[in-house]
Image 1: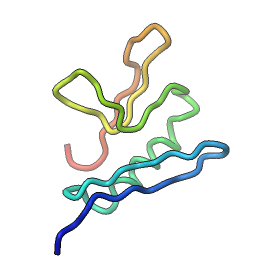
Image 2 (image 1 turned 90 degrees about the vertical axis):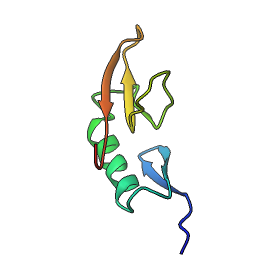
Image 3 (image 1 turned 180 degrees about the vertical axis):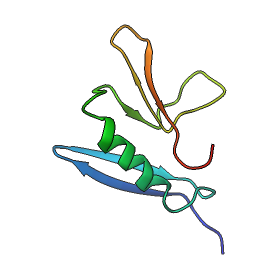
Image 4 (image 1 turned 90 degrees about the horizontal axis):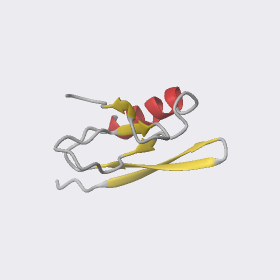
Length: 79
């Protein structure tokens, strides 16, 4: 059976955040990303989900300070 990519939408008060699940990722992966978002979105208001960086490695979630310094990097699942 061929697995396809999926999208999950979660609501956090007035925000709707879409989390992608790639075919090779386990089913819990988007839920783990949503949990990390829920835990840290107040502490890091600039948190982003699956944002592309000019780097070899890509975080599941990240946040930058207002001066452009990375202040939060999160990976869920196997690293």
